[in-house]
Length: 452
Image (cartoon, rainbow, N blue to C red; front, side, top):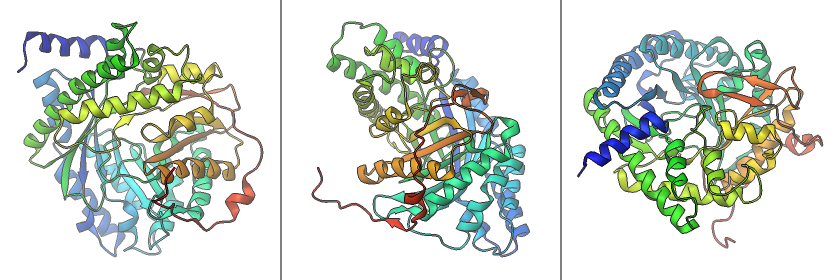
């Protein structure tokens, strides 16, 4: 039962410790919008999204006033558009992106995710056309997010897709170079993508999901750090316990908001994503939690161990507070969106290699990392392959969201603004991986027994 202390504690978390609901995301199936005429298909897509999500933003605002809880984003995820494009051969899939943008404008949401393709085992009809259209789609729209799943533990890694995505990421950066290369900031390359992810840019509505549902993503790095500051001499065991209790409180709020949104919108409640998602704001950093544990700066030796413990404790504490947990769940470590990560990268303490090691024990992967503009597409592909291999072998989701800073070099900065923040251009290895990437083919799925 809640008492006055619980209520005051929650108010303090919101006012002083940056606690918020990061997103309410409505997942919408577009499987009933197939049409061989792309114009008719686009009209069906627009009409269904507007019908289902027309009240999403007003309902989110109502819940904000009702409970006094900030809900930062109201978003939509849809069926991977490559599936719809398969029914319309020899036409430009960018028409779908424009229809999605029109729906986003009408509904007033922050983002629509799902300009996506799933090619982990190979390309089917529609996939290649959609992937090749991604740079233009991200260039001519503002609120559309794209993702491509290129590998999984069960199928291995599609290296032809990996090679292609290196070119697509670079092309997306070139097309949007006049806007600080914002294109690839809205593009994620996955291994083991999940179907119920409420977070952009990688969200899409999987084919196993219901026709329409509501997902909630919670946040709260500032709350966890504030809790730890009260116990400067605690042992690691005690720190894990503090994080678990704090994650429970954060997730309880997400469950409350998700259930209320589901009731008001008349659609099923999907999942709560138990996440520590940072923002560039001071006091809302995952890196600062790690430093509160005892690291002088994030990225130094011990960082991976601290992050592993944090990620596990968040899941253990949060899972008790919700009846349906899913999504990516864990600690996110996007560089440009985390003030502590930005500082560590600028100082040269946090390297690409250390970030890669950290992704083996937390959510997602190499996220919002700015690299020199002259990076070769094959090098981007090689970074994608490395990260996908971690996800494939460890049966977890990993992803890459790299931003080539066209016209800029190591030491320069890209400014995205808002939640996307700003990122320093980080150094990469100069030796070529082109021969490896140009071999093509598929890395076989790993053996599931004899693990070590």
